[in-house]
Image (tube, rainbow, N blue to C red; front, top):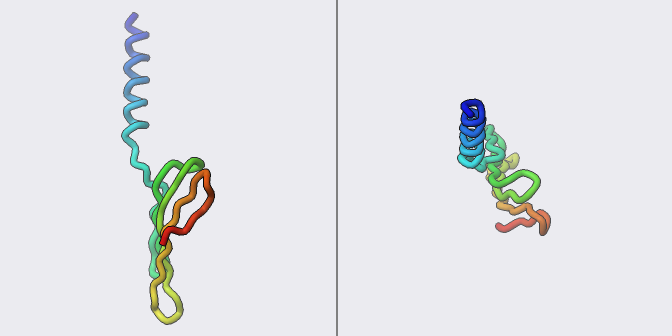
Length: 74
């Protein structure tokens, strides 16, 4: 009975950790680009990326990628 209680406690703690994890998939930044992505990989994600051109202008793209495909939203 004690072993079963320990196993049950371990399963409950594991499920709590999985449920509490952040949905951040990607967070990257350097001098020329940045990319942030949130969601569930392989299911649905959304995010944005920025890039700097040769003249120093920044360009940002926001997107959604899910069962409907990859779509730019702005």
